[in-house]
Amino acid sequence: MIRIENMSVARQGITTLSDINLGFGEGGVTALIGPNGAGKSTLLHAMSGLLPLASGRVTIAGQDIARATAQVRARTVALLTQSEHVTARLTVADLVTFGRWPHHRGRPGPADHAAVAQALDLFALTDLAQRQIDRLSGGQRQRAFVAMAYAQGTPWMLLDEPLAALDPRHARDLMERLHALSRPGPRQRSVVIVVHDLNIAARYADRIVALKDGRIARTGPKVIALTSAMLSDLFDTRMAVDAVNGHPVVVPV
Amino acid sequence: MAERRLFALLGLLALLSALFLGWGLREPAGFILSLRAVKLAALLVVGAAIGAATVMFQTVAANRLLTPGIVGFDALFVFLQTGLVLLLGGAGFATLPDLAKFGAELLCMLLAGVALFGVMLRRGAEDVLRLVLTGVILGVFLRGLSGFAGRLLDPSEYSIVQQASFATFGTVDGTQLAIAAAVLAAALTGARLLAPALDAAALGRTTARAIGLPFDRIALLALVIVSACVAASTALVGPITFLGLLAASLAHAVLRTWRHALLIPGAAIIGASILVAGQFVFERLLGQQSTLAVIVGCVGGLLFLFLVLRKSRP
Image (cartoon, rainbow over the protein chains, first blue to last red):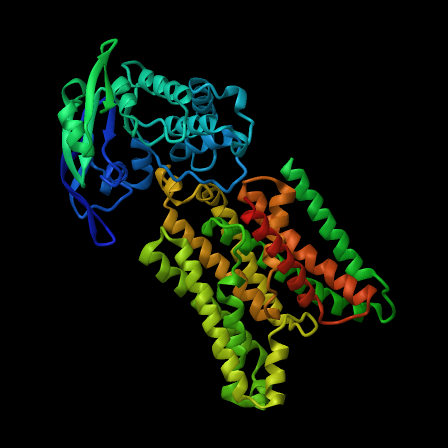
């Protein structure tokens, strides 16, 4: 379980997150939603232990993530960020193998190769394994980076807008895979994902954490959290929530 | 595949070295050969140091256009020369013991590099660009100071500074060369150990940290090695702007790999090959002296412009 207690984060003297108290249970998909600048990415980075906190602490399975070594942290939490600009000439297989870095430290062994093969298979990248990543389409590229995060073999996957710039088919495809991964089973991962598409959140998330102005606006299971009043207040624009096939559907009105 | 190309490059360097040593050899062959061997060793040390340093620097800076020379090392060297001539006078400068001058320059540049990189990284390692820009501005400042100091010198003293400001391989001292070679050997050993971490660092700071790489520590170590390489080569022969850019760009183009265990030796071999081939052509075939650094600067500058223009194309 990830527990955040009284957390505040300041960047260049400006408080971007304040008084965050949250708990993330294991398994399932948690969607972080909120307007631009609400602090979603900052929250994700702080949860991963990569961002110094102004106050409070983040514990994962009881361990303070700020006190963990880089290797222990990277074996606990996989973080996929938005700024994935890579200058090196990597193939998809190379990239995914880098996900195993906390385990092999630059010298991958048979267990790492097996984990990479599994990640490639799981994200339908086996046929593209030897393709250069700069020759991939946007959807394939994004899948490769998510596969890299998966190959890290951590119980937690924190993904910062992995659906950005994906068309509905690719976005849905990726979310189906992540959703399947978050279900109970030997490969189960707990997925926390920043999304802007509220219907994706409504369709695939189990829990919602809504952020506004660096504070928690609402949190809970999606059927309870996703209401017209909450969303209208969150985004300062009128929104209606309906239901299609048992899933909430969000429509601006 | 990349390994085979690396061996081919090594073979090319061996061939060029043999040509450099043996072409047009006359009596007294032993004496001429010993002179040529010292010059060849200097070319190899300088080319290898600058090539290896540039690949590492570009990885840490996440930019294939930057070289240590661009962030002010060359300017610092020229500033040191100008300052010494200004303080000691032309005659005083000329009577300075070579080894002491070399040692002091090496130490000064190493300390300046480590101080610049260390302070900047501690203040905000996420912004390597800020580090680089600080270096560039510092370089402009030092060039300005050197220019000002140059105006205070009389013409004969100024010509001493001018001479010391361009790389020359004709007057390399054996002891200095041995020290520079030892620094290079230590630096390359460090680079070899750091190579896997540099592979991960090439993913960018955030991603590298996310997979458990202590990026800031690795970047600082790499920059210390870069400082040592550039300081040793510049103190030995003087600045050769753009050699690093040529060597690193060619290493990436020829080896087509991301593995620093191959890229670093590859750039070192290419850097050395450029210098040996250039010196061979100018000295043996064209009978010219002291034009190599200018030509390398010119070709490297054109490559720099080409890379910038290619990048800026929509």
